[in-house]
Image (cartoon, rainbow, N blue to C red; front, side, top):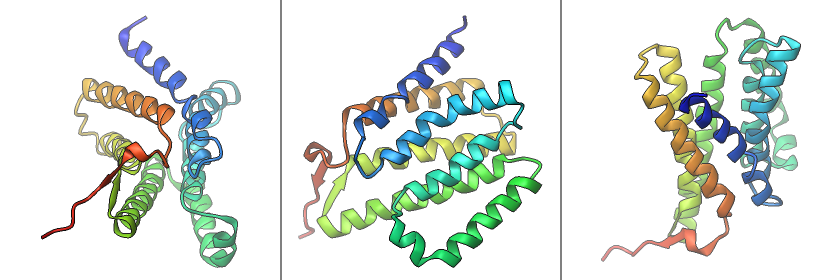
Length: 191
């Protein structure tokens, strides 16, 4: 077995732990969807014959709704959410390359995490490393999909470096929760 496959297997195993640590936290569903999407994708593609990308596309939409949404907000913006879901389903059925759809959902998630981090920073004058780790994780996903779509192919080594970085982030999310006071850094007021 090559070192590349070892890294892939380790990644799949390590990402099963953050949902356990984040249980009952604000991002439990986000981590649960991340943990389950790869195993479900492997099963669906291998045994059911689902087209590559479908599971990750649906997981991407679920991830969008797992970040910063609650039932009241979903009902409040029911028309907006209905249109978004209908557009998503239409694109899922017509796009020949679902990587564009996955990229779009992760860019939406990245924007949500940026907003959450800036609101927290503004309201508390504290920089939360948990939010920065979420932002960096989403940036790595966006970079990987831009690389896949454009075909620039910065190299397999780059892919495995990002994967190794994502493993470190999974370990971080397995150890720390959002509300951990060690992750908040008070910013000094400017003189």
